[in-house]
Length: 210
Image (cartoon, rainbow, N blue to C red; front, side, top):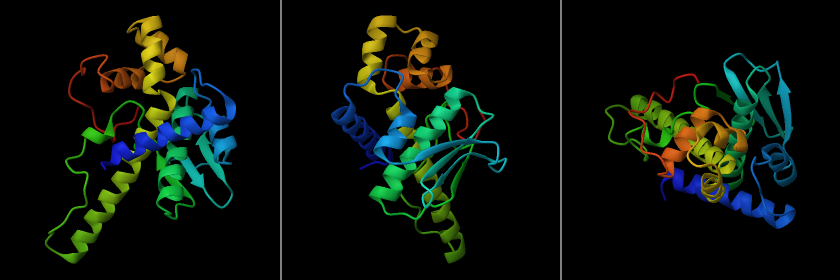
């Protein structure tokens, strides 16, 4: 299974679990409640994060820290991204990610990271063990962030609800973004990803700030 397919499947399962407990979802998706009531993760919107971090996952304290200075739509994506790390990597893969911080560069609600790297499998056959280990670590870090971003996009903008909203509002990006409480760029990309819109052009760098 490709990295992003696993992430999308788990995001949809999270939404299904929520609906079983709390009824049918309507946009905007209550991402803070999902973090709290499904995964028992509190949200701390704070000025105390290191400057390079937009979000940080503290497993031992069961807290997602979010950068207070970010716009609300960005905070929501950061929360969904960190929930993705918890669901995909802590629960499913049993990885130790306590204190795992994610920079604003890699939490991307405006680009699709899955198409910006040439590989979705570990790098092999490198010339020296040291280079090989570094490259494998880089590939693993990319995998984690790609999956968390894909999870976040599916969680906040479920395909089934996007289809209904498009029928209601048409392909009007700003009203759609407001309905789902996401950024205009995130909605633009989501509509492209779901083939409601053609791709706007070459993707910008995954490491570009929003």
